[in-house]
Image (tube, rainbow, N blue to C red; front, side):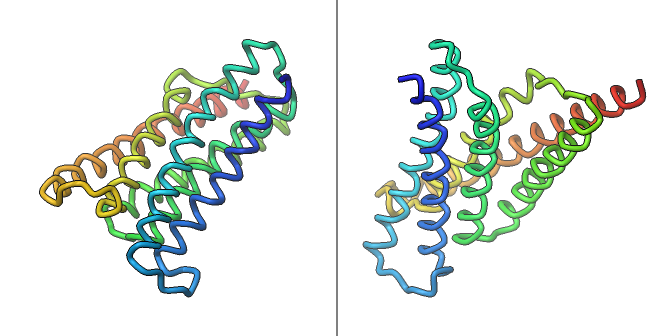
Length: 201
């Protein structure tokens, strides 16, 4: 049982790959034209995989702390798996519908994620550790909720939902994605301020 948290993290990585490949295939990136039924099935499967992967983001860390089996590998893989899931969903969405309402906030989120990762590597090399802020702890949750909403909108016909709801749902999903992008940028600014202060000291 002590290996379960790391297995959940590894499962999140595998599910992230599936989410991207499924959405990319529906978007035509695989060079194969899928029929309506096959495309809808893949879109639904991608959404379910995304939700399961998002749930493991909570349980792997929670179980590791509860069972007191926190490991070095878990500490390394968990944030990587989070970023891979976010990137997979974003790239999959862009393969489906590369609209401005999705491209801009997605680009901001990806820029921040890679920039902060690079910042952490630089500061770690100088012996400086950047503590996780309270807002940063919620940042991933906000991102996952927003991307989940975008996945529902992108695969709307596959869910069999009334077409009359699509407009309001799309507006809500785009608004959530922009909120996620803003929160993501704010946390990036917090880390930058921490790094400048620590390095100056």
